[in-house]
Length: 254
Ligand code: COA
Image (cartoon, rainbow, N blue to C red; front, side):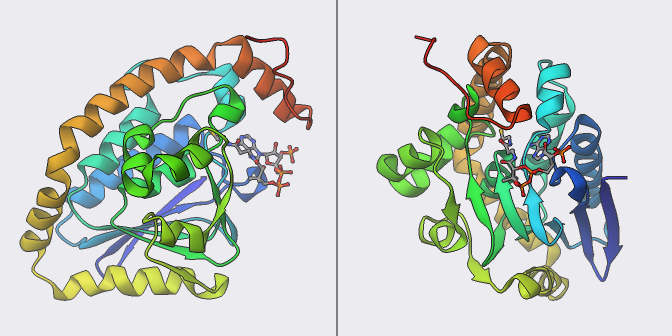
């Protein structure tokens, strides 16, 4: 099983565990994460959710083989179920970014409440480099968080950035030594055992409310375009290049 779940001391942990493929997320893994989030939200024994990866890798994003063979298109596909479950979770979600966080590995952090990043981690949103467009409402949230100039570096050029950059631009709370990031995130999650649970949930809902409709609308607009782009010749060239371990050649496109 590539997603491990466990509930201990009020914290539901969702651990991405497919290290041989750098924790690339398949349809089954998105579904498992969606189900775990929904179960955690409904379980009175859970006060907070912790999302984590493996040493050196949080997730390399969507499985590129799945992008080629089973591209998501329908609105209830597992990736959309995951996105909606994360957006709908009214309990605090804490991410321990144990290593590289690529694509949705970074954009999911925009919807977590606390983000702690290993000092060895690199983040990136290389959608354009893959002939794609931003997803998970990142086209809305990233420019709002860091301004157009820095957003263009990350979303148009796909430049990777460090945990310290992520803190500076408002994506993450803190950078920690690689060996400490999960324990630190867990300690923060466990603090919710001492807080009034309904007050926490209502407060989170209030904090998310002003942007909620816009986020959902952007998710739908991006999702439609993303689905079209997955089938585009530009994306096909990028996917082939990935599997052939070469740089993509976009020179023939206009
Ligand atoms: N989808 C499918 N397979 C992936 C993958 C992904 N997103 N990311 C890594 N893998 C596979 C590789 O194909 C490789 O498989 P192989 O051993 O059968 O050849 C294996 O995982 C190890 O990856 P590798 O690239 O050799 O590891 P690395 O340490 O050199 O680099 C990354 C790690 C994460 C930087 C690199 O794998 C990467 O850039 N992955 C793609 C990220 C991406 O573009 N994601 C989509 C965003 S929308």
